[in-house]
Image (cartoon, rainbow, N blue to C red; front, side, top):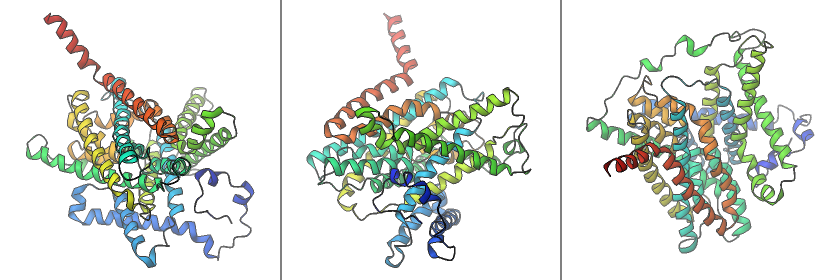
Length: 494
């Protein structure tokens, strides 16, 4: 039976000898080791249930709209603070769960059959993706400015640490953890005097993002209600699923020789297995200096992106089989895939929050507070400003859905949106769901810069300049109709 080394990287986990992974002959099921991984999952499940009980039964937590998963993770953090219980939570295990839950959740979303409904136009979906990407960029700009200033003039902080702000706020615990570990490795190589706990720094930003998205979102919502700009709507009817939500036309039976849920899970796992094979294959290729120094070290952190691409490819192949009449039934079920992705993201949030360690965090508290505070302020102001121009007919619905997502996850955006648009009568919900692919495409340069920036202070300055230029391009694209209208009016007046 293999064990996890304390300082192992994700690549180490994947490159374990295959025979070691498959050989269980040395393990007997009456030994404690056989239960270790399962017990960790049981702890996560228990924390998630307790978090849900707290959110349901405690009035101020219910009103705050904090996710049950975050409350469960915070419970485990409190539990870890008790000396007698600190060793029960396996930190490396929690990091691994966070990492894989991110990838599996994105694969499940990629496999869904999403169609652009009449509420959303293709251009509006692309513009929403541009808003997502541009917010990542402006979060990165704010974070980098703070971390660079602290590196040169304040307490020693890793110069590229601020780039973890868009990963924590915009992407969530999974990416915050992935790039946090990469930044820790670069900090050890470039600045040995700085013991930068990148994973804990990133995960803490992600946990703070959930609180910002929920609490700040609810406070602003209540302010708008008092001003008479919003009214509370009944939400009960919107939470009842209809028959067509569970099953589409021509799908396989719920239970035949194999259960329908089993088919969905197997498809997700098969696609994720392809992600491993592809990534491991790339690791053995010669890609030159850029590929070796930049791409390969962070490629394992792209599991969610590669999983999305393979999920879309797998879904396309299934559709081609159906068109060629090699397959007569529909195997993909959107409802179950939604539930699988929801489970993965809930577990990711619990495990990611529980993985936070404050042992080496003390000297970075001040820059951390400044980064998350400025990040929250800039995200709020920027998303509100763009939403008024991008969604003139439903600016508040558009704002709350995007602000919740860009500080937490898509689930946070949907929760806030339901408070003012419970039946999803505006296009805001569709924009949020369908913008994922365009956001990934437009935001891909940011992910590449995440691997380039930590290599040296000079690389970080170059990254900052590129981000500013990229943000300007994206913002002009979203406001192009307003800008050109003003120019046209100016010419007419002349």
